[in-house]
Image (cartoon, rainbow, N blue to C red; front, side, top):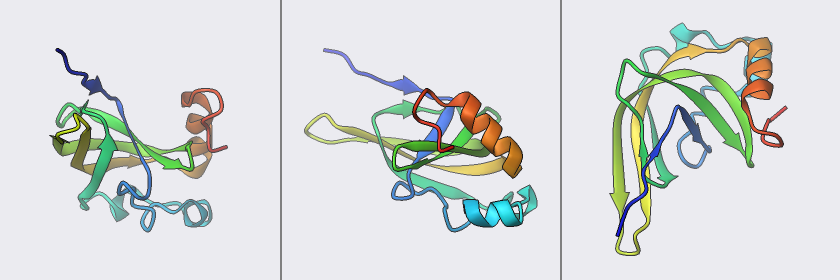
Length: 125
């Protein structure tokens, strides 16, 4: 018997899993780019990320990606503060945690990195 644990360099989550869409809103960002100072002191949470995933603790950085209907939109960089892996009797695991944003991409770079870093067919743009 074995187990499966995934190591990640990206936190890719949906709005339902806790992506802070109210703070990181693409339309608003394009008009008036969000500055790091606006989010730097906030602690964000995500939950119910399918599977057992390991995120190395700070100071390791991760990419923050909003999954919008299966399309990936890169937003910036984060550090992971906490993570919890839970399982149930059906051998289903989920990962939850807390993170801080340490970088927000300007709108032009956001387009470039999203196109460059996503697998074919997954880019929001």
